[in-house]
Image (cartoon, rainbow, N blue to C red; front, side):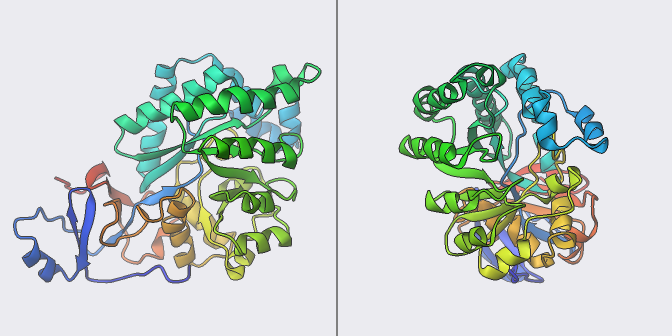
Amino acid sequence: MRDAGIRRDVAVAVTGDRIAAVGVYGELERAYPGATTIDCGGRVLAPGLVDSHTHAIFGRPRADEQEQRAAGADYLAIAARGGGIHASVRDLRTRSEAELADLARGRLLRLASYGTTTVEVKSGYGLTVEDEIKTLRVIARLAAELPLRLVPTWLGAHEIPLEHRATPGGRRAYIELLINEMIPQVAAARLAVFADVFCEPGVFTLEEARTILTAARAAGLALKLHADELVAGGGAELAVELGATSADHLATISPAGVAALASAQTVATLLPGTMLFLGKAAHAPARALVDAGAAVALATDFNPGTSPTPNLPLILTLGVSQLRLSSSEAIVAATVNGAAALGLAAETGQIAPGFSADLALFDIADVRELPYWYGDRRCQATWVRGKACHQFDLPVP
């Protein structure tokens, strides 16, 4: 991860939706006569950024909870009052697919404006068969409409809904609903690539997560896991045991969890924006993970309650300043490793022949400036599959 493969004074040739060649400008100009030329003017052309963990389908923001945290309430206390995920569940259940699509469209385009070209989008604010499928249909609708690459993840195991918590046996009944009704319907309709579970005390236990993810894998879904965010509970080890594509959060991961990820293909997806917004001093041990040999990705965790930011370059800033990654490590974490966290490492995240033409142009002269100008939007243009996706002042044909 310390070598981002920086090259200078080169050109990129794109044919259709693929990168055809990377090399000296004059040689490519001769090899592709008549090609449309875009002059990047000495700025940094990067792989399009990959945001491998978001919850972008929701209704209203939860600004009230930020004030509650400032007054001393923690995440679990807010959830116990009916806030947190439950507040977003109540809200989403009242909204139509069209309304949710309208709200999410602008949010996703805002993510794109910062240089992101691939976005994982989770369900998880419905928690009924009907509302989870409604959410996933919205993701499919936007994937067909927007120039972004969207990757859908089912997260029906985001919480135990309040109506099931309130009845004897309701918790087990909800897990049975997930396994016997929701997962089969989602898989049959091919509405999701991944299944995810929020494995945390007070939400789903380690054994419950294992049961749900095993059923999802049997249904043909790849696996992800919200792991070790608030308490070191063995989530990272479970993700490795089940062959999950990624284990996400990991703010409290144990040394055993670090060792497990270092010995496996499971990507450690870190979300420092969440810890910053929650006012937590501790962050995931990125340096220990990288030094042990784990593949580390960075993502926004864009959601209405604990990380309401669409700015992935800002997360790179936190990767350097809070997680002690080098600039190269942070950039790799948001490109090729982010792609690996979505099972797309052979498709996107690199500027190399044969890869999808997913590119981002930034108004910087040195790649280290991407995490340096924190909070600033330096993206001037993006292309997804060779087509213009987002642009500010660059004339893009």
